[in-house]
Image (cartoon, rainbow, N blue to C red; front, side):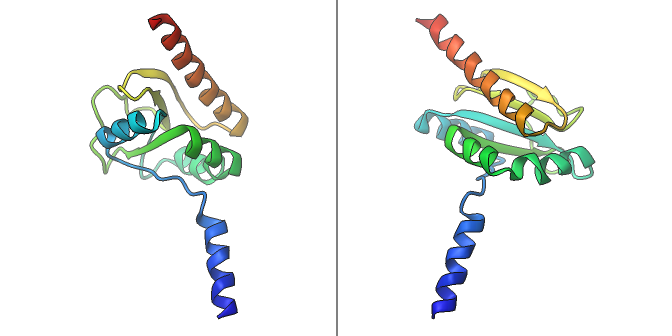
Length: 137
C-alpha cells in the first residue's frame, strides 16, 4: 500500500502541472471569459521539426507551464487534424497567437522560441491587453 501511495504522489508531481490543451476555440473563449484570462493559441503541423522542438523544450519548462496554466487558456491546433478558424494563418509554423476572451488578436508571432523569448511574448500580449483596456475607459 505504501508503494501505491508513493507512485500516486509521484504521478501527481510529474503530471500535475500539465497544460490543458483544447482544440475547441469557442469553448476556450467561453472559459477565458469565465476565468478572466487571455487565450494562447499554438498552431503546429504533424511533421514540423521546429514545432516538436518548441513542444519538447520551451513548453516543458516548469515556469512556462505554470505561467500558461495560471494566466491563459491554451488552445493547440494541428494543421492537418483540426478545424482552424479563418482569422488565424497556418503558415509558416509554429505560429503563436494571443487573444482576449472576445477573440481579438492581441499579439502574434511565429517560429521556435526559447523560454526567455516566449516569456517576452506573454508579456507583450498582456501589455497589449492592458493598453486596450485603458483605451476603452
